[in-house]
Length: 133
Image (cartoon, rainbow, N blue to C red; front, side, top):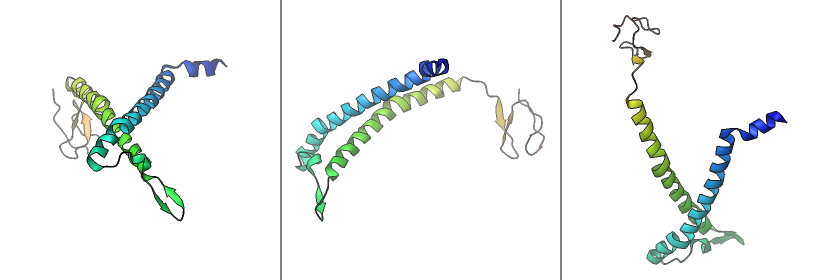
């Protein structure tokens, strides 16, 4: 029982649970945004007031492709928000943090494998290289 308690109280698990809950709430918010604002905006241009009502039938089976269009628009909005507000800024922060780090490896001029900066011989192709300061 103690191990299970430690597992539940680990930081990563709690952070993941919070992320899932916030993600679900954000997904519901974006779905509402799409059905309340984006779809009517597109309808003002295209004339269809609600994509959810779009469907076709084959042998009595109803295929609601309008619901799929609403979900697709929601997905694209969520993907754009995640990319522009999370992925891109984090990548810039990582690049900025790595910019000031001192290089510990370099490429061998003969085989282009990564070798330590102070190496005098490549550990892959055994070519002699001049060490860098």
